[in-house]
Length: 133
Image: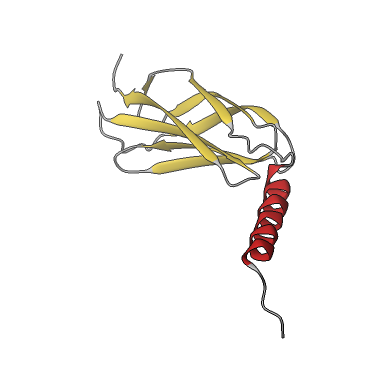
């Protein structure tokens, strides 16, 4: 059995470090984060009415789905668009507001884009329930 000299161990360690650096230093796919724009048509809605608008999302690596949600104090309505392989979506939405939503209460509208690398981005807007003219 032969023992390794310190110079041999150092050379082996340098080779291992060089191999590791070469494996990690090559070109890689850049992770991309989705972008999303939410446009709500009206800032006021009557109880039992609808929130309408448009959602536009992009992601260079590919989107999986986009979801738009309207939440009042007493309900939640959701619309989901599955896109699986597309890198962009431009979609109108129409979300119901509960007939029992209290007057002057907020309606939170959230749009979330999910990409194929497990990134999700959410944007928000707010409308208000109003009764009467």
